[in-house]
Image 1 (tube, rainbow, N blue to C red):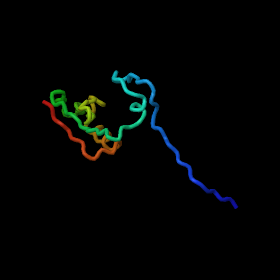
Image 2: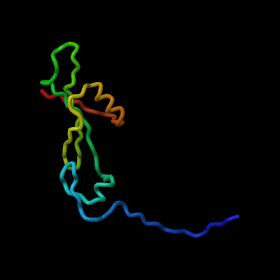
Image 3: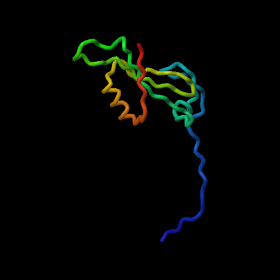
Image 4: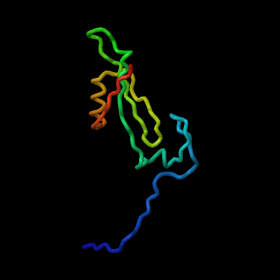
Length: 108
């Protein structure tokens, strides 16, 4: 028979708090903790744009004039994720990412 007694308190530090580094993708400078760990206050808005001027005129031609965008609500930065995709691909992205509401904006 074995008995375990006592308590121990652990402190976990999130991320590495070293020198700031420049992101190779966007070129902004962040601390490593911000690059590694998710910001709990970060909020994204997902939407699609339908570029009607690029819409094909043929009957059997697939309409691949959609773009999928993500907007960071805190910084108001917008990022184009996919371009020249179909409405069916938009539905698959929505399903795979678990997005409940996805607005499609028509642009003339």
